[in-house]
Image (cartoon, rainbow over all chains, first blue to last red; front, side, top):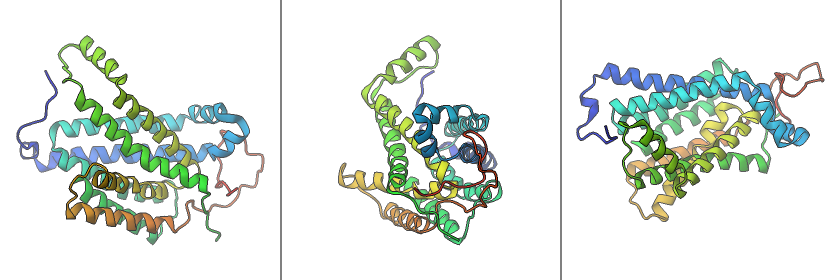
Length: 139
Length: 156
């Protein structure tokens, strides 16, 4: 078996529900990974300060001894493999812009809900503008 | 409420996040298209092909850039909000688009220019605000490294 690009559009082969579920899996795994990684880094503290006190080894040790960091990386890896699965069944022109732009919005919502970040109108506007912009660039 | 402003060095970190990810992806894409098709039929051959691919210049450069991206990204998340870092570093897409236009002389459609403008406005929006959500300072000042902290890093 050799890796090759399909000759016909795959999105026409699979149904819209399958496409939506596949993209949702990518977005969900990516958002979970990003939020958990961000939570881990916040719990560790400012890496610049840690590096100033304990050196580069201390900063690396602080990151690598955080279980939450590895859970986040696990979900980011899951997002990567979900993306590969999605690309195996759907068109790149659908998966790439949809997942990249939707992730920005879901991250804003997850940041507000789970990380208690102050997502004000400015950040919602930025997330919305970047979301549409990334979609236009990647489409 | 005092706004958390970034230092020039922290802007440099955000710049590295923005630039390293798209450049790393581009290097990997260029390197992977340059090597012969990889067959999944023979796992040993697959493993050998992947190991050989890692040592090609473009793929090695891509891996180094992506490691740099992840290190910078983690550093940025340690002193800035996720909802600040993600939109702010989207400017990397604009940089790649401009490079492809003026360096590689590719044709950029009107739709993609509209994307560039929207991302630029979005980054400008978020960059004018605070990078970190203000939280009450902890009462216990003996915060040790590696333990959860409820406060943000102060600008130095």
